[in-house]
Image (cartoon, rainbow, N blue to C red):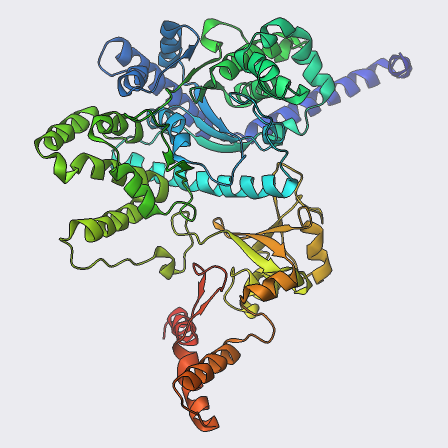
Length: 616
């Protein structure tokens, strides 16, 4: 009213001019926003839509197979959330997105996680957007599905460590999937993006008011109480917390966010996730209908129905749960289950299981699987099918180069027909990739927090010298996990980075997680998760880190040479010792004592590298 009164006191022509100014300003803002979307992007989008329409028609005419038929043929589909015919038709006419979620309850995925991811990769191969979701927020609640005992509460440090490792592990797997897509000659599609997400991005900003208003007030308690997970945990287990009871609703909110913001319409999960997927589909529809603003409300036609499916529970012919070896999980982290052991695990699969696993865990065409099995039946002792399965899985998890190396090593150890195997680590090139990244989790003494940022990077093995550390920090090329733009640690459940600067050592302590963990990064894939231990524990371990005071390379070499000479009954003169030291320091490398995977070059190698850079 006050605004109307002020406006009425202005002469009519002045009002008209002001109204024109408002309209022109709004038009200018709109035009600016539209210009931010390039014409090439609009053209690509239009072309993508046209190609999809043409593809849908070809599927209808029987000229191109439907990807849903492929998933069924390979054995990926168990339970379906939605009507099968409707799901198939939605996928034909619409480029829907799909996602698979995993909670960071451990610091690595295991082979059981691959099964729901494989159909996601197949969908991406065929032009559908795909997302892998890390449950940084939901991990703090704990999925009660299939459990009688409540999960232990994880500390902020544990969750941050697990999120960091899973994030980079999934980045590596997606990189390998891209290579396999090219290997099997699937066409690149600009509209088929793949994403790696963390639900802390949106759940940490979700208010209880919005959660109850949009979803809680429309959800009935009866159906939730009737779920098998709830009944069993209440009657046979240790009871159920409110957080566990609401877990499917939070997972449903994830589905809604991805549906609303990214057009992801399908959820894929493990065999025990059917209840959560159905609850998620209902949550999406509930939240969609509870939108009060008409211009924001999404259409609810059959083409926009949220859908999903689960993959089967996989056991071997003896009934043992797949992914376990002697009762232990077979991890995808090469430092928990080596690539050689992963290769060996699939080599040991029995003949009666091998054809099914080739369909589930490889991208081999069905005709190729059939041909391979025919060859395998002729002479099972050669285990040709097992070798191909192991090779394909290691290629997916660790990359094709590592798969070649492990196949050679396995043949060398057990085949006896290869006289020599040469393994050249890719990191010798100096480039850190997901396939050759060193072990990320290391331990260091608490006293390293008194070091400058440059020396801290040296201690963690991220740089080769203190001077390189200084140059990297000055160029803001090194990062510490923390709240962006703020001198404090990570928000629990997140993974965000702050550039390191030439600050005082005490400033670094502000980024500690649970006063125990510090996460550092250089480039995209060179990450260290530093766990601080007491100086006493470090001293008792007998280990050293690069740049540790009074443990320089010269001092260590001198002590080693004197000890070796003493053991041999020799007494070195100062001149002899100095000459031996001079020869050794130019050729010897330094290995991080508590992480042999991190090797710093010798002086001779550094000089050669510098000469090469100068073009000498």
